[in-house]
Image (cartoon, rainbow, N blue to C red; front, side, top):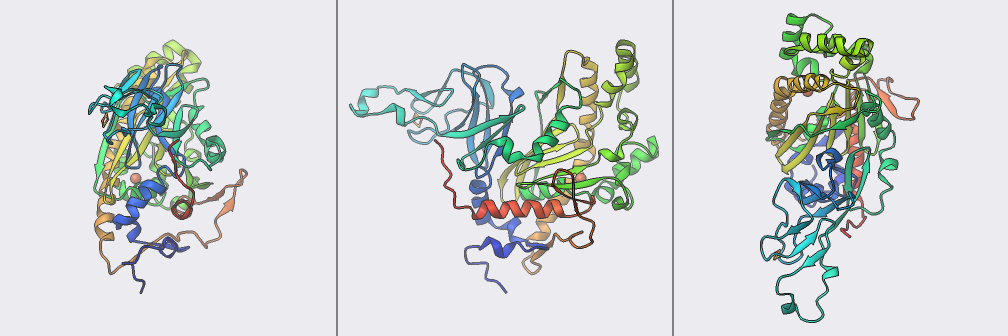
Length: 433
Ligand code: FES
Ligand SMILES: [Fe+2]
């Protein structure tokens, strides 16, 4: 029996075919994760469409660190620690806006939107050697991949696109469904709160095993009303006999591909209010181009997990925002496509469809997260199974060099823990500079 009252040796908690329950319940591990995982690797911060103009900003977190993602007057994106160098107060207290200066409300020290300290009231009180250039806001290393803004405090990581590897190619596939279209996430947020550890959420997003059981009521209702071909019916029965595949994209990123099950996107999408009149309008206006335009209404058929906190599910982004060891915010962002040759009706329909799963499917998942957290609190049962399809001979390496397997394979969960362990054991110094 291990003595878990000692500081954890993470390697002891992760075995090839199982992980220890304390990874989901231990407060000390959670606090370390918030520093070492979030900020120790490229972590999703925001989407460029949320700060479209010079001087725009949004307030976010990097783990539990309050941060600001801003554009300077030239439009360059910055990640700043939202922490006044004076007495430690948060400097920015608005969720979003536009400003050239952040002024700390406590004693009114003020900073440019790239983080430099430029104003200190009654400055002479600090004496002649006071050096404002050393007292800016902490700066996060930031890079953008096709609108997705990531940040890290790890200055040894390779550049973002290299780090994403084949996950960047999968993001390309997700973004290029309408050639030339730009993804926008400016439709507001759908914030769900759950009393569960943040990792229960990412476990679930690459879990092709659960949908036929967890979402049975939703699927049955759709089938009864709309027939067998409609969205997600392929998750019923033995899905390992079907066409979905799961991939380990490296660095903790994973991909559950449902697209091989979809023959005609528009015709398989779940029905939505007013769709017939929208479709008629589009067919009249676009002629032959109406069919591909209608196809981008339906979810992408992709579940792309970017370690540690960005999940791309269907047409939506879901951002995992941990709060405590046993509570997490899940923030869903619907997306629209901005393109001159795509009429607004397409985005109206996309919006209707994106209200569907978070309302009717996600509650099933949230209930499971909360019940997992309750079960994992039991000390006498220590381990969680992660071995599915590890030794059934069904895994293979795909043409991109990625490990691939059947949809119920737990290879995504194993890939997550492999990266988790690397980050938690890393000796790299994390710095804001
Ligand atoms: S704490 Fe910010 S100005 Fe004093
Ligand atoms: Fe689910």
